[in-house]
Amino acid sequence: MAHKHSGGITAIATVAIVGLTFVYVKYSKKQWSVMSEQLTEMRASTKAAQDAAIAAKQSSDTAEHSFEMERRRAEDMEQAIISESSGQFYVFKNIYYVDLANTGKVTARDVSSNIEISLTTLPRNKKVRSLGTFNIMAPQIEKEKNLRHTLDLQLTTAEWNNIADTKEAIAELGYVRYENGFGRTIDNKICNVWIYYRTPEDKLNPVQGRGAICDRLPDLLANLPKRP
Image 1 (spheres, rainbow, N blue to C red):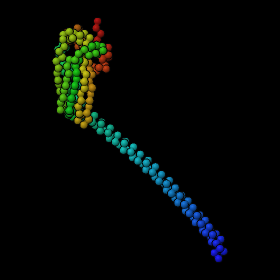
Image 2 (spheres, rainbow, N blue to C red):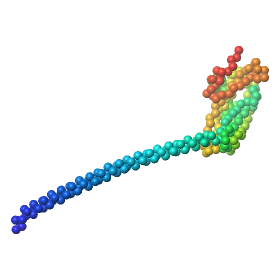
Image 3 (cartoon, rainbow, N blue to C red):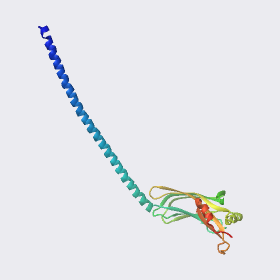
Image 4 (cartoon, one colour):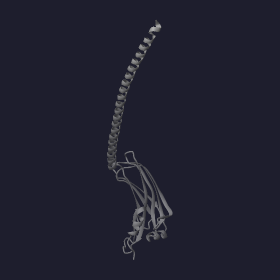
């Protein structure tokens, strides 16, 4: 009896398997389709999120840059400003001075300066010898106040004559450093040169001087009054 119906049972089983396989395949395709759509949506959502993040970052950077620009503009208007000036009171006198003046609107703090004064040759501004060094330190310089230091150059009469004949010059090299009142350290380099020339036609000032930054020395020499 079993042998009689075995073929039919096998056929039914086969049909059932085929049917189940078809259902499974259809279900799998449907599932894949849904997953594919979800993946596409996730990718689109991720791209939108990335674009939004980039836009937010750019907006934040722009706002931060604008704020920093406004802060620096306000700082530049209100900060302490230390300017350096120097020279001699009289030609052929060895007293040389350096002034550190605060021309800003707030107090400058932690002020320090090191400036070497040298005798140099012209026109190359080559150092002959050191005449002395200013080492200046001050906890603060209030606005519209200045700090003056003096130095004895100990130049000989022969050296002063060379200076008056525009053969030698007095140069200064160094720096001025201070805190500008807003937490920022300012570090200014100094390289200046003083040259002198004779003006015998001027009985009151037979020797006169001019100063400039070192880079402008060639122009300074070129524009001296022509001697007969």
